Length: 153
Image 1 (spheres, rainbow, N blue to C red):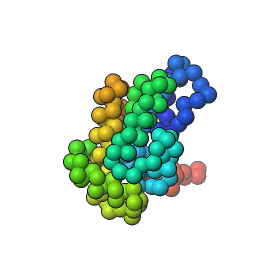
Image 2: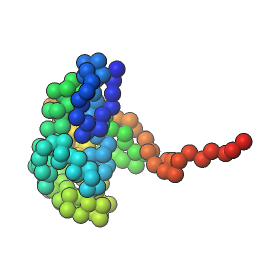
Image 3: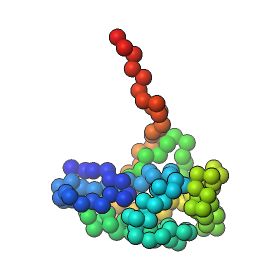
Image 4: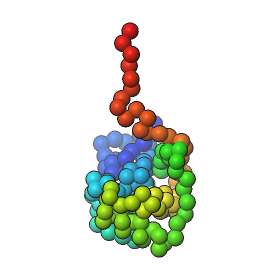
């Protein structure tokens, strides 16, 4: 049975040879500006994230943790307006610094550049760990933000 596990899932309490983990990365790519996501990443990776280098190291720790527990894939749901683009190291430094220091107050261009950096970093780790990167393309998670409208009969 194949699972989809949040990046900070401890992967404990089940047989990971029967229930196969998958590293879900949506929050890392699209919500890194949220302080709670940064805190979850630091707890899961066991290091303080303060720049591109430590972010890359933290993501590497996640891949180590998941592959040690028999993970067989990394997954992400890509919204319709996201088109992954590799960015320069300099742009990544600026964007990650803005996202980590200003959080949700970071400007949209920095948040988008940070998302691109994290996406490509994940892809590189997928290659290094020989894991497929499952992309669910065109997913709009906010469609029913207020719930599904139900008409009483």
